[in-house]
Amino acid sequence: MNKPLRIAVTGAAGQICYALLPRIAAGEMFGPDQPIILQLLELPLEKPQQALAGVAMELEDGAYPLLSGIVCTGDPASAFRDADWCLLIGSKPRGPGMERADLLKDNGRIFVEQGRIIDAVASDACRVVVVGNPCNTNCMIAAHQARRLPRSRFTAMTRLDQNRAVAQIAKRAQVSVSAVHDLVVYGNHSPTMYPDFVNARINGVPVPEVIGDLGWLRESFVPAVAQRGAEIIKARGVSSAASAAQALIDHVRALRTPGAALHSVAVESDGSYGFAPGVWASVPVRTVAPGEYRIDTRCAHDDWARAKLAATNAELVAERDTVREMLT
Ligand code: NAX
Image (tube, rainbow, N blue to C red):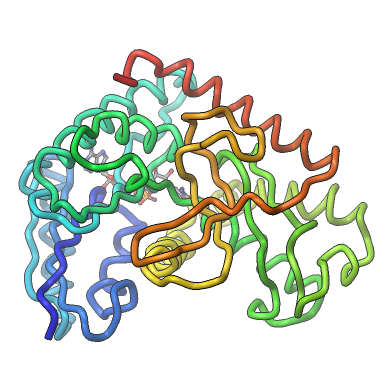
């Protein structure tokens, strides 16, 4: 048996984690031969800690052979100590009447603290994934605290947007989702994102050729992907959880598995595709070694797509300007 990996997870009593943690314990994220220790962080308050204790009891009751240990804590240093992966899911939700700038700053403070502590106590091999919104900018803030860990270790999750886009295209083309390849989402995890149907393929044929309806792709598909989260909130009364858990499993597995497939990950921009250097923008990446990736710069975009990329970049730049004092 391999040595257990330590997986730190924040927001552990929240609804995404309720869908996610049993699946990590069952081996779906790190594989069937990889024991794990879950280091679960919640706010250091009575109610979330009590809820977390309940989650831990259920994990115990799952009797998962790969689950070698569970740590429940309200102390970030205990949660992140020696962690090989830090899954940062907990964040402060937007309250009634709260301005977006306040949301960015309130969350920014959480990610300044967590970034610093991760850099101080996590394992040398640590990888960090930010899910808590606004995830691109939260990730940028956390990465800026790192002195020991390279910034390339900090990624934010846009895989849910990719999965939503793949599902919509497969449904329209009446094919299996596994027939859809290279569908990458660009930019911010927000309604400005751009799901690039032009470079995507169905069984090797460009999506626009198979679908044969550019109007539908531009005017229906792109907004439908961008608004899918809001649709789910309208229907369920709460935000996506099961699909977010699946997307995080896909995100981590894709980053751990070298292969030819393109996947969507928000990483530090190197200027590719016109994103401002230094913002965390979702771009096509290829995993080149376990946990190591390269931005793929070979996708071509027409003027219509370039306008979409510029709009989502402008939003990321505005977010960065709002939290500039947190980028040390
Ligand atoms: P919940 O409100 O159910 O759970 C969040 C949990 O985080 C709560 O239990 C809270 O006590 C905890 N928490 C808050 N601040 C914390 C801190 N500083 N340290 C540790 N724990 C803390 O939200 P849930 O539905 O689980 O969603 C979590 C986050 O994911 C939200 O920010 C949400 O917006 C974001 N999402 C991001 C997605 C993405 O694609 N990147 C999609 C799904 C989701 O909307």
